Image (cartoon, rainbow, N blue to C red; front, side):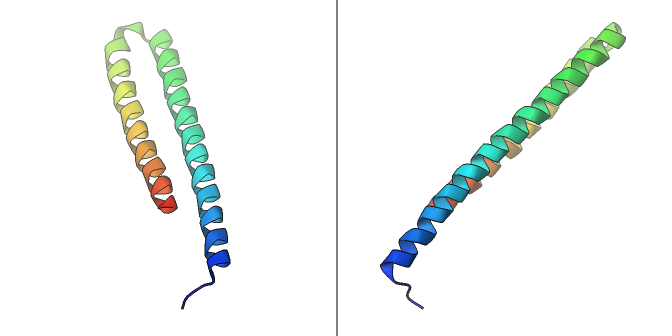
Length: 82
């Protein structure tokens, strides 16, 4: 089924807008998640300073995993545009 050119352009405009909104939501979610990890790590270190090394290592790994997932989500939203 061939759509007229005008309708196809409108669909692409909506897809681009959706991709932009999706990338923004992903960035906000990743920022909130990493912020929560940092806050919890600081609180844990304040409560048990002797466990600071373990807490730092775990929080860095978790932050890296969140960054990986958010990067993947941004790439998927940008691929929608193509």
